[in-house]
Image 1 (cartoon, protein in one colour):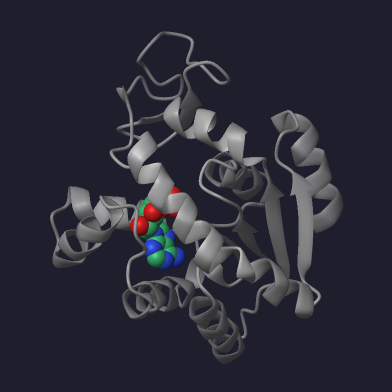
Image 2: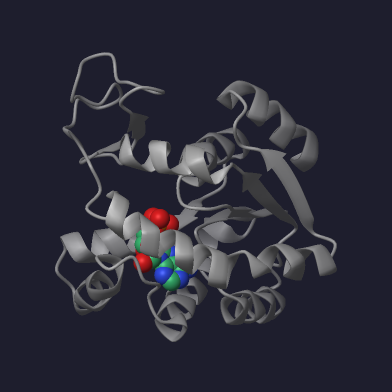
Length: 214
Ligand code: AMP
């Protein structure tokens, strides 16, 4: 079973690498951020609640996020594996995930920490664009689309995430250092942690990831 957590600060490249890994190993990509954004787009009660936190760069409360992930991991398509992108983000979420994994016999095997220096994160986040239709990620300088403003894959409009601005990023980085960075030691203690250099070109990084996952 290929069950993976991608850890890393905002802008480390979790989403971009998640898409490549999931396509390669044919496993579902579970992004809590995407799930919240979908709920916001559909104006559901979950979306309304999540939006009040996300717009401030704060974390959505653990009980809400844990419930959402438990329901998602119970689905049939996670039987042979899955990749979690953006979850867990706190120690209580990680502890809950350990329990959920045992209960469903779908425990996490690889925790991959994508390491990127902080000054690069700011540039990556501020230049990030995403396709409004299919969610494909771009960067105005580092990963531009072939035609400006249009997705290479589906022709959709490229937009900037509302929380991808310098001010919200400050709050997100602070949440990351305070709540999420301690997960590195948590998973080191469980002997599941692998760290990769997220500054490398994507293909080189993918070879490093393949060497870990095998
Ligand atoms: P992301 O797309 O992973 O950068 O997530 C965007 C935003 O969604 C975060 O800044 C949080 O506000 C919220 N979010 C995503 N995943 C989680 C999580 N595991 N726990 C709490 N909040 C989350």
